[in-house]
Image (tube, rainbow, N blue to C red):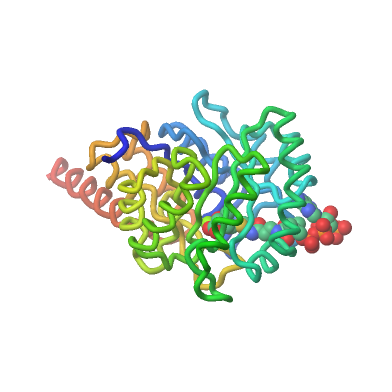
Length: 308
Ligand code: HMG
Ligand code: MG
């Protein structure tokens, strides 16, 4: 039985734009976030409070958060790898912070410069302070379905990190296919196993689309009882510390699938298509979204017919 409502977390401004070679100006990011919140998202991952030496693309975090409209009904979230990141995020009035770990040791070292065990100890005071400040805390787990450095990732390694993040007090846990290698059967098996140790209702699917499997993985997740998904407008993105990984599933494609199944999201697809056009025009390329390109072509054709 499929859910009747799905929460879509728009991660394009963070997961997408962190990967752009050319820095995107803060005013463009602000315009993008405002267009996305007007479209009705319950949650937008706006930026990250990470070291600017590691990810210079997110160094304008404070300016972006200061510039956006705070639409009631939208939660504005940001990544925080350590207490320093949390302190900076708190000054910018975020609604939710995201700690991010890994199910693979090598990626943990490459992405946040510490082992998995060390990362949990680093997150402990962060989560405590975030809770004291009444913030929601999300726990992101990378490389759940495979790692570019270690290959297959054992399910027991995934369960282990989920248990540790749950014990820290995470409100929601994101299962991330960072390099987009997962297939539907693997996703289904993983969700069934993870939901033995953490409630399914608070698990999210974060699928990158490198191998073109993201929508199939979303459908498998829906059938396994998941009702929170991450996606990026125009299919933006990748991960700077996982070479070859492409963007998240495009939000336009995800919404088309969900709405086609009669699942409510509260998000206006047309407005997301326009936001995708806006950011893609700035980046000088077409959106990486079949649905965006199809709907844009349809709109242009009907505008042409109207002027004939
Ligand atoms: P480190 O070098 O071990 O940090 O990096 P450190 O504590 O030794 O500090 C070194 C310098 O960084 C110091 O500055 C600190 O003040 C500064 P210096 O004295 O040299 O001038 N620093 C900071 N500055 C600003 N904000 C901070 C901060 N912390 C330290 N929060 C660290 C450790 C975690 C900081 C670093 O590895 C880092 O920033 N990593 C983040 C990498 C990243 O953002 N990756 C992409 C996001 S994850 C992702 O995309 C995956 C996801 O989408 C899910 C999926 O798909 O898998 C979520
Ligand atoms: Mg990601």
